Length: 423
Image (cartoon, rainbow, N blue to C red):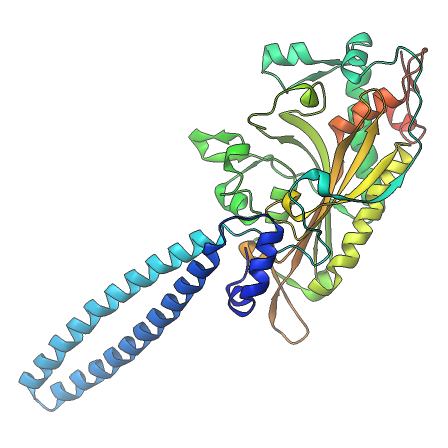
């Protein structure tokens, strides 16, 4: 959530940022500033009235001591009227603050100055590419045929038991999943991330804290009887560990990593581009999260990008990095880099990771702060990245490494899998 003071002092910059993010409701900025002015004016009036009430209370006491009953009764009547006025002003203040918050949470984060203008994924900037695109043998097939051929992932069984987008992993397919999870976790712990195992359901306060609510309510699975949500990513419970927390400056950065299943409704998704593992309602992901000082966060973002690059290099997958344009960025992000791997049998790029800096957007909602050397409480910055999401990684590994003898496992994964070939 944007800070009111920032909007108040940088109205023109906020408008430009919202335009860069392709946000249409620019009138909200003026509405927020008007409500802010009403709030401050009402607060001043309420404080003045309260001060007058205190003076009247003292005066009533003095009058009573002097035996001036008639005058004290008159002053009590004025005090009663002032209390009624105070109650009305406090009710009005509560109403203004609610309206103000309702409008503030509708504004997306401001994009970083390096974010390009653009409305669609076609306008993202390709800033880096590495790895050779494999030339497959004649007769190579996409992963959904490979999984059936080697009986390692069963989409039909998942559809029977649950529904589309909830596959069963079997045999070497299940072991490959477990191998990737352990590989990603080990790589993160070697990079000094602290592993946590968070809950996979959250309450509304946690959804609000990281910006999933109210913006993405329709994309999450809701457990109505308990008023809880299945997590869309481990980012949510991990970052909420620091809700209403004041950290010490020497604790920063705090580096956390977690493996969780993730759940996304992906309402309205259909067609060939979501076939097989390309888009699922339940999938596994290892997530890295950092809470940092503001002056360090972009250097940390670079380090997180290098970490994801290292994973893809060890998996021997061709990949590219995209700087997302304003219109393709998430609601919460100030700057996002997407990683895509090339799927040789499908002949297209598949997104496998987003690495983002949210600056103070989430921490302002979370009230996540740290005490600096001057003893002041300062909002921290939050960052996260997929390191990595499994489904499309598995799709690319299966497709790019298929041979007539079977599917070869990259060397880095072989100790985790316990085999070097799926056949």
